[in-house]
Length: 491
Image (tube, rainbow, N blue to C red):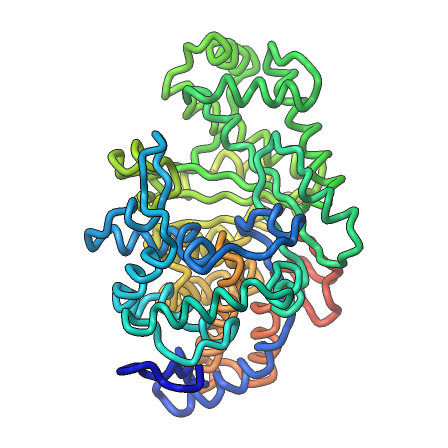
């Protein structure tokens, strides 16, 4: 596309993008970023479908690749009145939706201006320029020419998933998988002649939601996976323990748990059995589920001490807030909204039981920024087991990353944080998300250097730790370099 389309503007990514306007900060930030920009990408938590890399087929056409899987995109378009049907999002009842990918792409391009100043816009511009080599800004006028360019590239071997994995310099990619998943795609990857590392994560949430209409089916699937009857709580717990072992055999190093409220606390043995029996009969109440989930987080922490799996806890998302959208299109369609979250009291039972045991790594994530300085940083700055996950979802953004570092570093330092993870389903956005995080962390550290809080040698070590060493260490994905100083001294 050397000839400019009529009225088109060049897509130019400034080398100092996202850095502070102050010259001293910008100079230090750019120096730190230059040191980290080419480090391998460690992706310890995300939602890429492992089938993508197991099958290694060509990506679909551009709309199916970049629009349909990305709720960041269609939630914004929905907010401006664009029907999800017009974007080709499948309905639960199979009602007709737009099936022409060029029309979907054209509609997206005509609304691309909505993403100005957002992290989605920053990621998409990076993808267009750095991944696909697009030279012109995406608009209604350039939409079809850019579609043709992307479509041609996606048909080539250089843009197959494994080739892009290698080109992106990904060292390890971790997926998120249901506790009952066979992990067949992970097995295919392990048995192939490809050297990429793709590891599973054990996510048992559906098995803890005992008041859900889907719970009995989830329990039956767990029973089939283990080949046992699950008629009592003890058998259920041992089946979970066995599934954790299976995930570890397949290379997994972590678990993942999502809750609205991070309640924790033991139920007496007789009571948890009674609750489980009510669930099996289909009589579990919402209160039963709340208490059961709180109990199972305690169980998961105890099991992590036994088997070494890192425990991730994502709290504070009210899922499927838009019931109209949920009923028509199902979950994960942009209708999940943050709520105020309390950690100090809710986590006290778990942390009193396990928080001082260095064998546990509990990575906490939140959507409630008000808790950063008041609760999360003090918890991580005290308990050996607690590590802070990076800004997640609504806050994995330019300003969100800055606020996170500003509000947690003085109390927790950076070595009580997990570095960065991209937490994405959109495979081609991975390098863009890491690049943005590395720039923002370099900018934060550059500000400390400019104010003489730290010197440049320390800043260099900290920049590398945030970009690369900390996620490897936190998630037990590699031997920690000798230069790291993890909590408690040398390993």
